[in-house]
Length: 291
Image 1 (cartoon, rainbow, N blue to C red):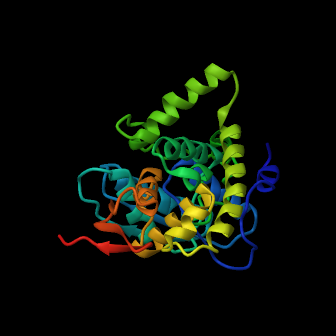
Image 2 (image 1 turned 60 degrees about the vertical axis):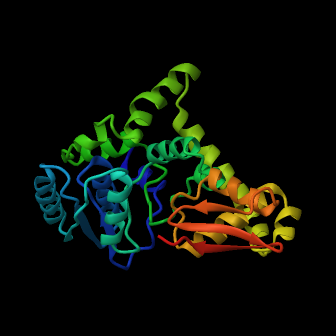
């Protein structure tokens, strides 16, 4: 597979503007940078040091040298992550906060397949299964992980190895190292293209559902009850996320509890982030729960 053939499956924006790239030092982000330069882009490489690993300083030095060898700009940002639960998610939030809003990240089709399974078993609903991954630019989302490794090998670049990517304490590692191989063995086929295709189909259906949901007043219980279940659920999900300022924790279980308030089974339910959804005279509202 040549670089030109791989570029045909990349989604880099038009050349002519500076392109910020988030590069961790792993094969995926390094290959993204190499392909961006091959496509003629003027890039700036951004690296975030979370300070979570003893090797982090070495990774930053490696990426800075890589940027210098590539003849492009380099920006280093350091963030602090407190110890505790949900470390992976909190590190991700801190990383995105430190990067430009239009940054490109090196997620591949393998990453998306993992996200589909993770979201499915977290009960994330249609939006989670669609795994649109549109938060930032993902220009190599149609490439496979083995292809990014091949790009690095062809360029004579040896990627950094992040031990956290092999730590079974992280659920994504279990999906990658055990669940996906088990599915492949059981069905005798590579599940990654199938999971990406399924996500695309769900995303297409979700566009129609979102369009219908946008026509509904999400505070009107009568309108919600009259709508198809999927449309009502999406109207509630979008409204709750916009009102509380985050979609974190608004999974299918939270929406199901909200629907019980809509149909009058319950008068109120707790929402993530210290909020409460309540109903009065056919109208629902979101309140901040007093500490």
